[in-house]
Amino acid sequence: MNPISRRQALGVAGGVVLAGTTGALTFAAPAGAATAWRDLGVVTANIGRTNLGQRKAAITAVRNALRLTGPEDLPLVGWQEIGEGDGDTKEKGWINGQFGPRYRNVHLDDGGHRVPISVPRVYDVLRADVTPVHEGKAHVSPNRVISEVLLAAHDDAALQFAFLNTHFVAGAHNGRTDPEEAWRRNRWARHFDVLHDRIANWNASGYPVIWTGDTNRDPMPKLFPAKETRAFATGIDQIGWLQGTNGVQIQLRKRKVIPMNVDGHDARVAVLQIRRA
Image (cartoon, rainbow, N blue to C red):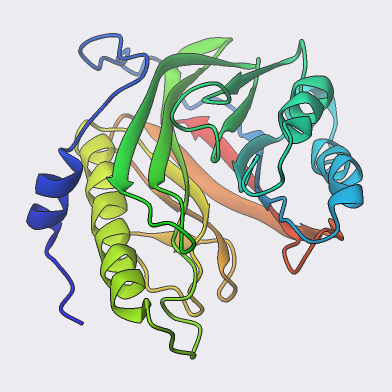
Protein backbone atom coordinates (compact mmCIF):
# COMPACT_ATOMS: atom_id res chain seq x y z
CA MET A 1 0.00 0.00 0.00
CA ASN A 2 1.20 3.45 -0.87
CA PRO A 3 -0.45 5.94 1.49
CA ILE A 4 -1.39 9.16 -0.24
CA SER A 5 -0.08 12.48 1.02
CA ARG A 6 -2.06 15.05 2.96
CA ARG A 7 -2.01 17.28 -0.11
CA GLN A 8 -3.46 14.47 -2.23
CA ALA A 9 -6.02 13.69 0.46
CA LEU A 10 -7.30 17.24 0.44
CA GLY A 11 -7.44 17.12 -3.33
CA VAL A 12 -9.81 14.14 -3.11
CA ALA A 13 -11.84 15.43 -0.18
CA GLY A 14 -11.78 18.95 -1.54
CA GLY A 15 -10.89 20.37 1.85
CA VAL A 16 -14.63 20.89 1.98
CA VAL A 17 -16.40 22.79 4.72
CA LEU A 18 -20.09 22.15 4.22
CA ALA A 19 -22.72 22.59 6.85
CA GLY A 20 -23.46 25.75 8.78
CA THR A 21 -20.47 27.90 7.87
CA THR A 22 -20.95 31.33 9.39
CA GLY A 23 -18.05 33.24 7.88
CA ALA A 24 -14.59 34.28 9.02
CA LEU A 25 -13.28 32.83 12.24
CA THR A 26 -12.83 35.32 15.04
CA PHE A 27 -12.21 35.14 18.73
CA ALA A 28 -12.26 37.80 21.38
CA ALA A 29 -8.96 38.99 22.71
CA PRO A 30 -8.08 37.62 26.15
CA ALA A 31 -8.62 40.13 28.91
CA GLY A 32 -7.65 40.29 32.55
CA ALA A 33 -6.20 37.61 34.77
CA ALA A 34 -6.53 33.89 34.18
CA THR A 35 -9.99 32.49 34.70
CA ALA A 36 -10.69 29.56 37.03
CA TRP A 37 -10.37 26.05 35.67
CA ARG A 38 -13.72 24.55 34.66
CA ASP A 39 -14.41 20.86 34.10
CA LEU A 40 -15.15 19.67 30.57
CA GLY A 41 -16.20 16.04 30.33
CA VAL A 42 -15.53 14.63 26.85
CA VAL A 43 -16.93 11.26 25.76
CA THR A 44 -16.29 9.14 22.67
CA ALA A 45 -19.04 6.56 22.17
CA ASN A 46 -19.44 4.00 19.38
CA ILE A 47 -22.90 2.55 20.00
CA GLY A 48 -22.29 -0.57 17.89
CA ARG A 49 -24.54 -3.07 16.15
CA THR A 50 -24.52 -6.41 17.99
CA ASN A 51 -26.85 -6.38 21.01
CA LEU A 52 -29.36 -3.89 19.61
CA GLY A 53 -31.63 -4.17 22.64
CA GLN A 54 -28.92 -2.54 24.77
CA ARG A 55 -28.63 0.64 22.68
CA LYS A 56 -31.05 2.82 24.65
CA ALA A 57 -29.41 1.85 27.94
CA ALA A 58 -26.00 2.57 26.41
CA ILE A 59 -27.03 6.07 25.33
CA THR A 60 -28.47 6.68 28.80
CA ALA A 61 -25.21 5.51 30.38
CA VAL A 62 -23.28 8.00 28.25
CA ARG A 63 -25.60 10.81 29.33
CA ASN A 64 -24.95 9.87 32.98
CA ALA A 65 -21.20 9.38 32.54
CA LEU A 66 -20.21 12.23 34.85
CA ARG A 67 -20.90 12.86 38.50
CA LEU A 68 -19.44 16.33 38.95
CA THR A 69 -21.07 19.41 40.47
CA GLY A 70 -22.79 22.23 38.61
CA PRO A 71 -23.37 22.53 34.86
CA GLU A 72 -20.07 20.83 34.05
CA ASP A 73 -21.64 17.40 34.63
CA LEU A 74 -23.12 17.57 31.11
CA PRO A 75 -20.70 15.66 28.84
CA LEU A 76 -19.61 16.79 25.39
CA VAL A 77 -20.08 13.66 23.25
CA GLY A 78 -18.66 12.47 19.93
CA TRP A 79 -20.85 9.59 18.70
CA GLN A 80 -19.98 6.94 16.12
CA GLU A 81 -22.01 4.38 14.20
CA ILE A 82 -25.36 6.10 14.73
CA GLY A 83 -28.01 4.47 12.53
CA GLU A 84 -25.33 2.48 10.74
CA GLY A 85 -26.62 -0.93 9.75
CA ASP A 86 -29.31 -1.08 12.44
CA GLY A 87 -32.26 -0.79 10.09
CA ASP A 88 -34.03 1.81 12.24
CA THR A 89 -33.75 5.39 13.48
CA LYS A 90 -34.18 4.63 17.17
CA GLU A 91 -30.68 5.78 18.13
CA LYS A 92 -31.40 9.28 16.82
CA GLY A 93 -34.60 9.39 18.88
CA TRP A 94 -32.85 8.18 22.01
CA ILE A 95 -30.08 10.75 21.63
CA ASN A 96 -32.66 13.51 21.19
CA GLY A 97 -34.50 12.19 24.24
CA GLN A 98 -31.55 11.81 26.59
CA PHE A 99 -29.67 14.81 25.23
CA GLY A 100 -32.65 17.13 24.96
CA PRO A 101 -33.32 20.76 26.01
CA ARG A 102 -29.98 21.17 27.77
CA TYR A 103 -28.12 20.12 24.61
CA ARG A 104 -27.68 20.86 20.94
CA ASN A 105 -27.34 17.63 18.94
CA VAL A 106 -25.27 18.81 16.00
CA HIS A 107 -24.99 16.96 12.65
CA LEU A 108 -27.69 14.47 13.63
CA ASP A 109 -29.71 15.45 10.54
CA ASP A 110 -27.04 16.20 7.91
CA GLY A 111 -24.07 14.53 6.25
CA GLY A 112 -22.49 13.92 9.65
CA HIS A 113 -25.43 11.85 10.93
CA ARG A 114 -23.32 8.74 11.58
CA VAL A 115 -20.86 10.78 13.70
CA PRO A 116 -22.96 13.50 15.36
CA ILE A 117 -21.92 15.63 18.32
CA SER A 118 -23.94 16.38 21.47
CA VAL A 119 -23.02 19.80 22.85
CA PRO A 120 -24.20 20.93 26.30
CA ARG A 121 -25.75 24.39 26.19
CA VAL A 122 -23.13 25.77 28.55
CA TYR A 123 -21.27 26.10 25.21
CA ASP A 124 -22.50 28.07 22.20
CA VAL A 125 -22.06 26.56 18.74
CA LEU A 126 -20.37 29.26 16.65
CA ARG A 127 -19.85 27.08 13.59
CA ALA A 128 -20.77 23.57 12.45
CA ASP A 129 -19.06 21.87 9.51
CA VAL A 130 -18.85 18.45 7.86
CA THR A 131 -15.73 17.51 5.92
CA PRO A 132 -15.95 14.51 3.54
CA VAL A 133 -13.07 12.05 3.75
CA HIS A 134 -13.79 9.30 1.22
CA GLU A 135 -16.59 7.53 -0.59
CA GLY A 136 -18.09 4.28 0.63
CA LYS A 137 -17.99 0.86 -0.96
CA ALA A 138 -20.89 -1.59 -1.01
CA HIS A 139 -20.58 -4.41 1.56
CA VAL A 140 -17.29 -2.93 2.82
CA SER A 141 -17.82 0.50 4.39
CA PRO A 142 -20.08 3.56 4.25
CA ASN A 143 -18.62 6.88 3.24
CA ARG A 144 -16.61 8.56 5.97
CA VAL A 145 -16.70 12.17 7.18
CA ILE A 146 -15.43 14.39 9.98
CA SER A 147 -18.00 16.32 12.04
CA GLU A 148 -16.72 19.62 13.37
CA VAL A 149 -17.93 22.40 15.68
CA LEU A 150 -16.42 25.61 16.99
CA LEU A 151 -17.56 26.20 20.57
CA ALA A 152 -17.46 29.09 23.02
CA ALA A 153 -18.36 29.05 26.70
CA HIS A 154 -21.80 30.63 27.08
CA ASP A 155 -20.60 32.74 30.01
CA ASP A 156 -17.21 33.64 28.50
CA ALA A 157 -17.26 34.24 24.74
CA ALA A 158 -13.46 34.39 24.56
CA LEU A 159 -13.12 30.81 25.80
CA GLN A 160 -13.26 29.09 22.40
CA PHE A 161 -12.11 25.72 21.07
CA ALA A 162 -12.79 23.38 18.15
CA PHE A 163 -14.18 19.87 18.58
CA LEU A 164 -13.96 17.18 15.88
CA ASN A 165 -15.45 13.69 15.78
CA THR A 166 -14.98 10.87 13.27
CA HIS A 167 -14.93 7.11 12.52
CA PHE A 168 -12.20 5.44 10.45
CA VAL A 169 -12.81 2.51 8.11
CA ALA A 170 -12.57 -0.89 9.80
CA GLY A 171 -10.29 -3.76 8.88
CA ALA A 172 -7.28 -1.86 7.60
CA HIS A 173 -5.12 -2.61 10.66
CA ASN A 174 -6.74 -5.60 12.33
CA GLY A 175 -4.01 -8.12 11.51
CA ARG A 176 -6.19 -9.98 9.00
CA THR A 177 -6.41 -9.67 5.24
CA ASP A 178 -9.38 -9.81 2.91
CA PRO A 179 -9.99 -9.00 -0.79
CA GLU A 180 -10.60 -5.34 0.12
CA GLU A 181 -7.43 -4.92 2.16
CA ALA A 182 -5.79 -2.48 -0.28
CA TRP A 183 -8.93 -0.34 -0.46
CA ARG A 184 -9.31 -0.31 3.31
CA ARG A 185 -5.68 0.70 3.90
CA ASN A 186 -5.75 3.40 1.25
CA ARG A 187 -8.92 4.94 2.71
CA TRP A 188 -7.60 4.65 6.26
CA ALA A 189 -4.43 6.53 5.26
CA ARG A 190 -6.50 9.18 3.52
CA HIS A 191 -8.63 9.60 6.65
CA PHE A 192 -5.55 10.06 8.82
CA ASP A 193 -4.25 12.78 6.50
CA VAL A 194 -7.56 14.63 6.21
CA LEU A 195 -8.10 14.56 9.98
CA HIS A 196 -4.56 15.85 10.45
CA ASP A 197 -5.20 18.74 8.09
CA ARG A 198 -8.58 19.66 9.55
CA ILE A 199 -7.08 19.80 13.04
CA ALA A 200 -4.11 21.79 11.73
CA ASN A 201 -6.47 24.24 10.02
CA TRP A 202 -8.34 25.00 13.23
CA ASN A 203 -5.14 25.10 15.25
CA ALA A 204 -3.49 27.53 12.81
CA SER A 205 -6.36 29.95 13.54
CA GLY A 206 -5.39 29.86 17.20
CA TYR A 207 -7.93 27.42 18.56
CA PRO A 208 -7.22 24.50 20.85
CA VAL A 209 -8.62 21.36 19.21
CA ILE A 210 -10.20 18.36 20.91
CA TRP A 211 -11.00 15.30 18.79
CA THR A 212 -12.79 12.03 19.39
CA GLY A 213 -13.26 8.96 17.25
CA ASP A 214 -13.17 5.27 16.58
CA THR A 215 -9.83 4.95 14.82
CA ASN A 216 -9.98 1.20 14.13
CA ARG A 217 -6.25 0.96 14.82
CA ASP A 218 -4.35 0.07 17.98
CA PRO A 219 -1.88 1.51 18.65
CA MET A 220 -3.14 4.63 16.91
CA PRO A 221 -0.24 6.84 15.77
CA LYS A 222 -0.39 10.39 17.01
CA LEU A 223 -1.54 12.93 14.43
CA PHE A 224 0.93 15.47 15.84
CA PRO A 225 3.67 13.59 17.72
CA ALA A 226 5.24 16.72 19.22
CA LYS A 227 2.01 18.53 20.15
CA GLU A 228 -0.86 16.11 20.69
CA THR A 229 -1.99 14.75 24.07
CA ARG A 230 -4.11 11.60 24.37
CA ALA A 231 -6.34 10.63 27.27
CA PHE A 232 -5.72 6.90 26.62
CA ALA A 233 -2.44 5.33 25.51
CA THR A 234 -4.08 2.30 23.86
CA GLY A 235 -7.36 1.27 22.28
CA ILE A 236 -9.15 2.17 19.07
CA ASP A 237 -11.58 4.61 20.75
CA GLN A 238 -9.58 7.77 21.27
CA ILE A 239 -9.73 11.27 22.75
CA GLY A 240 -6.92 13.68 21.87
CA TRP A 241 -6.23 17.40 21.99
CA LEU A 242 -3.83 20.15 20.98
CA GLN A 243 -3.23 23.41 22.79
CA GLY A 244 -3.93 26.62 20.87
CA THR A 245 -2.63 30.18 20.90
CA ASN A 246 -5.86 32.06 21.74
CA GLY A 247 -5.18 31.98 25.47
CA VAL A 248 -7.32 28.90 26.21
CA GLN A 249 -5.58 26.08 28.07
CA ILE A 250 -6.57 22.41 28.44
CA GLN A 251 -5.37 19.82 30.93
CA LEU A 252 -6.45 16.31 31.92
CA ARG A 253 -8.08 15.82 35.31
CA LYS A 254 -9.05 12.14 35.10
CA ARG A 255 -10.34 9.46 32.74
CA LYS A 256 -12.80 6.60 33.01
CA VAL A 257 -14.60 3.93 30.97
CA ILE A 258 -18.38 3.47 30.76
CA PRO A 259 -19.65 -0.03 29.82
CA MET A 260 -22.27 0.06 27.04
CA ASN A 261 -22.83 -3.69 26.49
CA VAL A 262 -23.78 -3.35 22.82
CA ASP A 263 -20.63 -4.82 21.30
CA GLY A 264 -16.89 -4.55 21.93
CA HIS A 265 -16.93 -0.78 22.45
CA ASP A 266 -17.16 0.90 25.82
CA ALA A 267 -17.58 4.65 26.05
CA ARG A 268 -14.39 6.43 27.05
CA VAL A 269 -14.44 9.59 29.13
CA ALA A 270 -11.78 12.25 29.62
CA VAL A 271 -12.59 14.81 32.28
CA LEU A 272 -10.59 17.77 31.05
CA GLN A 273 -10.12 21.12 32.69
CA ILE A 274 -10.21 24.25 30.57
CA ARG A 275 -9.59 27.92 31.28
CA ARG A 276 -8.65 31.20 29.65
CA ALA A 277 -5.18 32.15 30.80
